[in-house]
Length: 485
Image 1 (tube, rainbow, N blue to C red):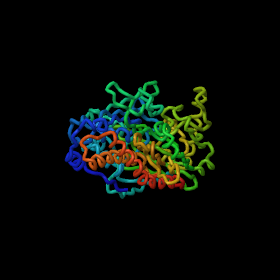
Image 2: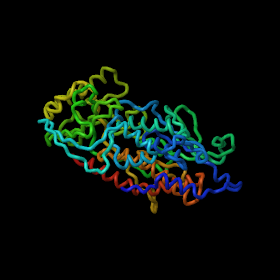
Image 3: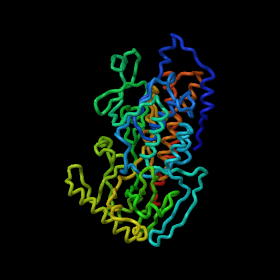
Image 4: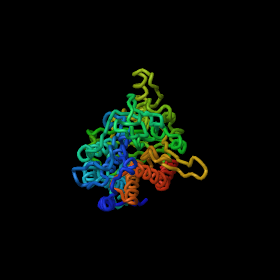
């Protein structure tokens, strides 16, 4: 994919060249958008940064949305960036992702680069002998390794320091989004302006908005709120899954292994799995994430690795943040009503079986691991991704509602399997594409202020164009998860 984007200098010049005077007849139509972004992951936070930078110098510390948007609010369910958990996997920000972050401004990219690890190589380890072969990466732009929480923290800090028109609310989980009808005055503020959308939070409060961006993940409450959107998607399950482990910073492997690459540990081929090891940046607390990549054939050989059942849409949220990648103890699955002793027994069964397996098939790698590492093991559910198809004859897939009031970015629109490592990169790129549509339509109309109509037209334009770019990547990634590596 090649991103067709304007530089900030071109954008600023093009939007400012032809200001449109405000008149009484156009004042209602030119009311400024009040945008609520549901989801404070990398895509949601980056979208807020890019929207706040419309018509402003991105390198200026005095960023403001004055005169452009009425407000930008980011709602995030988590009360704080998650620490080591099922979501603290290592992720690599590649050329696509770095290009997206750079659109937030030079300081935004510099901040991200300073906190991550440069990834220049792939290291192949023979799990039996311990021999390691180095393969240089071929990309022109080296990847940057993060943990997800670290990237979120980095973007949040930039918002706090430089985007004074953005409000980030943590601990604000969204339950649904509704559209007010003509008889409902609940969406009218004290100034008399109409806010057609209402965002309902878990604590019972309601926020009004002119536009909503759904960046709230694979099980998006925003997407589920609009049948015209949700009917386009099905959750597709692949015959592969992962077992997650964590190596603490004190382990010798963390100091002995290179931080500039990903390690692939290979057992004998008949084992039907392989292991990925990624050292986490020191800013994320250090240590290393370990992913044992398994397939249904793996379970046939080792039945105790059977993953938990697929998560149903109505069940999402009951397991807290472990739902997103669904990592829970296995080896005798236990439910929420199980006693502490049953949970401990389940975890011990898994850790003991893994330790024995690694000692047998990857002894050189096993020698580097402690019991603490095995005790951290969690079996994830099978990999799922969002497969989108048009909802009717003559229609195309769209990431926006027909009226242009709601748009989806990131996993809410195009959740993909992890095999190509492009999920986070494409999510942030979608935030760029959405805001580029705003720039483009403002330029076409010769506007200096983003009106409600312009924001809606931009959402529609993005919604129709983005699927054509990202769906091929989803399909390639899913195809890789079907194959044993």
